[in-house]
Image 1 (cartoon, rainbow, N blue to C red):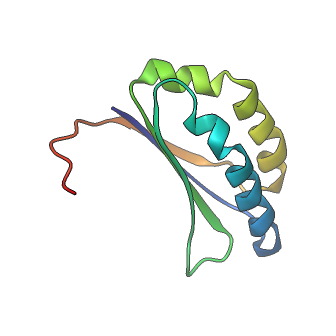
Image 2: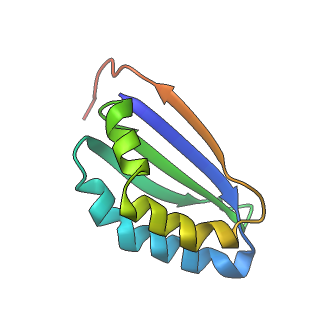
Length: 100
């Protein structure tokens, strides 16, 4: 499994619009082949911090996403609102077990 965690900050007054846009596109992203999870989180302490959590079957599916129109459109909307470039950590992971 491929995981990408993206952290960025925006002005506090911009955060509701950022989250709304991420939610607007989440169904399209979740429906993409190889997507296992896509979630946006806000920091309860830092009112400008946003995190995006991605899980993909493999890096190739993630690369297809980053080459997609939805990714490009998100960037056009989100990047101008960011106070600094995003920090993206990308890693491979192995699921040992899922407990329900």
